[in-house]
Image: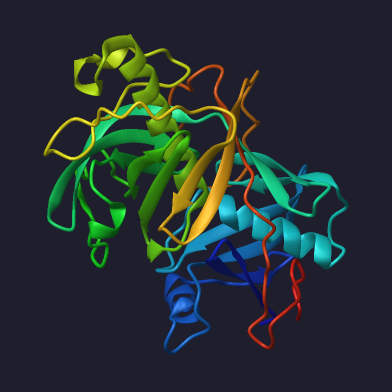
Length: 324
């Protein structure tokens, strides 16, 4: 089995080239490959399969072997791999995922950006994170998220065990983010990814955090506090507001919009730009495509992280190179 290994802001993946769709990947094999002690070690697996019309389909699997719909950092690493191997032509091309087709682009500075599509706000939800009850905003980026705004430093939350969530609301599981507004247009986030555990960053999770922060900013501007804003009073472009820690409503007026900075896990800085959108990208003809809710019109996210530096397990690479 041929493979490469890459990461996007610390979120690392195994890339398995399988243009003919001939690899049989069982959940058990994926889990063995991703094991950091007895395997190769990764947050997940990206299988590269040829598929029309986007030419390449990103078959993403979580570290436990379960199937996932979309991965923001993963699709950037996937794109870098295809470009480095001469399997795709830049600077812009499409990648098919279970959540639909995503447009990726190589920017003039060499960074890989991806149009993440229109976030879909699904309402409020709750989770118990490290023994602390949190309320948050359920957001879909093709994969499910619960972004919980909190009033305490995110480093104080124990993410060594999966957060407890309502299986009725999230039958397929959910990625849970704890998010604190730390400054003007800046939030800090930690994430527990379903099927993978606590990771150093999460691209779709950073967008979900930005959406939750935007909803708080809009609700606060209109009502003075998040707790005073009913779910249907927030403009559809941002969705319903989500309260944070149960110890009190989150009352910060953190502004959002162009250039919102999301610091993931206190380790890396992830930037996203929220811009006007006309239409969501078309969905790929792939199995296990999730059902999508009503999108918030006018809100589109573009993941603009720094240049990724994929590496191969055989030897470290130069910046922006695969190296194997």
